[in-house]
Length: 216
Image 1 (cartoon, rainbow, N blue to C red):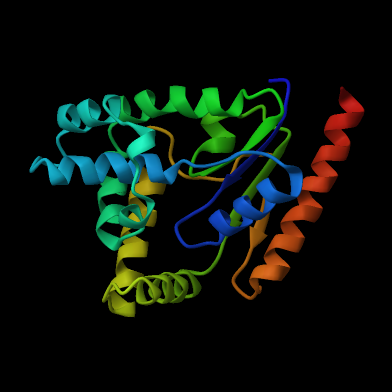
Image 2 (cartoon, rainbow, N blue to C red):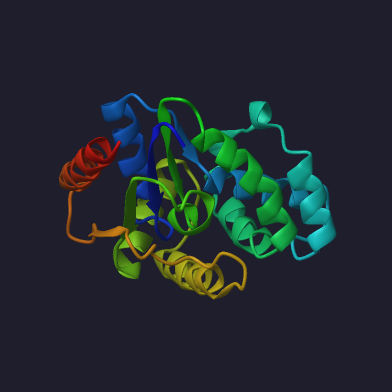
């Protein structure tokens, strides 16, 4: 790995997407929201009338994934998020999508990758690693506001229950469970504004970048 790679992990609605986008802008690096890949696979399976718990069907759709055809607005829905967690438990799906993620990380200048297992599995050698988290209640409120803004009706209690379910699935799967890398810096955004979270993330990354440049 020749470029400066930033791995940003954490649970749903923790703020890691916002942080990743800001870091990409700050350092002039391309950003990949890897969760969108799993959402796209899950949604493709459902739209084909197949079962997201069918490993073979999910793998087939993962292999056929065309990033040029991703409809990001459709992938931000509650349905897509629920489907993503269910297809993500299939090892063959994860293995299929890992290759793309690692290729993205190997870009000459570096990259920012946002997901659940970036610092632990995809690029464990990344010089900068953050684990962005927040309380389930704060995350449910944020997701509720996002869905309201997009015109999707959803109750906060239902969203909180879904977040708890997804956390359990993501952290409990046998293959690449969601957890902080041993050398990741924890960033709890529960009480933070977006500006404060981005500022804290930049300070973490600046320290990591200084160490990386010294070691080269």
